[in-house]
Amino acid sequence: MELVRNLCNDVQVLKSIWFGKITGSSHKERLESFYGPQAHVYDHFRARFLHGRIGMLRACAREMHKLQGRKDLVWVDLGGGTGQNVETMASICDLSLFKKVYVVDICGPLCDVAREKVAKYGWTNVEVVEADVCDYEPEASPATLVTFSYSLSMIPPFLNALDKASRYLDPAVGILGVSDFFTSLKHDKTERQHGYLTRWFWRSIFDLDNIDLGPERRQYMDYKFETVYEENHLGYIPYVPILQVPYYIWLGVANGLQYVR
Image (cartoon, rainbow, N blue to C red; front, side):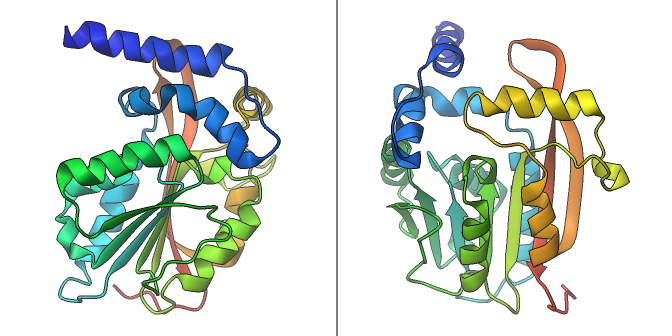
C-alpha cells in the first residue's frame, strides 16, 4: 500500500510539473498556482531529486558544531518551503543547537505544510514565516547560518535576496549555505564547466517552470562572499532515464572574514 500511495503522489507531482498551468500576475501568485496542488505530496518526490540538500546541510552542521557552546545560534532557511530542510537537519544534528530557526517562504500552501511539521514534531524553536525573502529580516539576529536549498534559482530578484541575507548574516562567524541546480558560464571554472548543449538544454527545460539555472547567481555569490566549500555534481531525475542535471553545494562567508574554524 505504501508503494501504491507513493506512486500516486508522484503522479500528482508530475502532473503539476508537466501539465499544470502557472498563472498569476505576481511571483507569489505564480508559485502558489504551481505548488498549491502538490504541496502535501511535495516532499517524497523532491527527496529523490534535490540531491545536494543533504550534503549542504551536513556541511553547514559541521560548521555549526564548531561553535558548540554558544547559546545564540540562529538559522534562517530562505525559501524553506515545507520545512523539509529542518526535518533533514534534525536527522543530522540536535535542533536545540539553535536558539531560533526561521523557515521563510512566500508560498502559502508550502508554509501551511511546514507549520503542520512544527506542530507534529514539537519544534519549539522553529518559526514559519510567510514572507518575501527579499524583504524579510529575522527578529533574532544576526544569523549564524543562512541557507538557500533549491530556492535561489526560483527567486527572480536574486541580487536583492542575497544582499538582504548578507545584511543580517553574522559578519564574524556567519555561514551562507546554498545548494541548487545550475549551468555554467561559457568559460567558467574547470570544476563548473559545461558544454553548449548542457547549458542550453537544462536552462531551457527549467525555464518552463520559472526556474532560472543561469550562471549569474553563482557569479554574484563569488563576488559577494568568500567561498569556503564547494562541490559540483550530476544527479538523476525520477522517472527520467539517462539524463543527469548539474547541481552544486556551496558554503561561503562574508568577504574579509578571517576564516579559521
